[in-house]
Image 1 (cartoon, rainbow, N blue to C red):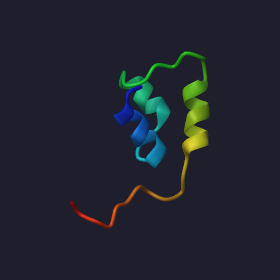
Image 2: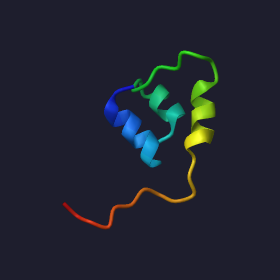
Image 3: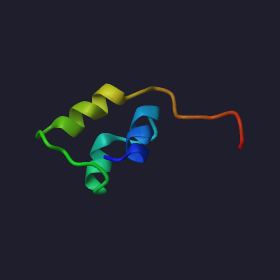
Length: 52
């Protein structure tokens, strides 16, 4: 995955399985995207109080 996809995953705005389905990431090990979904799951939605 590129930096934009990684940032979306890291900030909680996207799921690894959806990135794989969209062709924005490649799953090299079967089930890795599902495990990454669990690893990066957060209860809070990404939010930035500052508007650029």
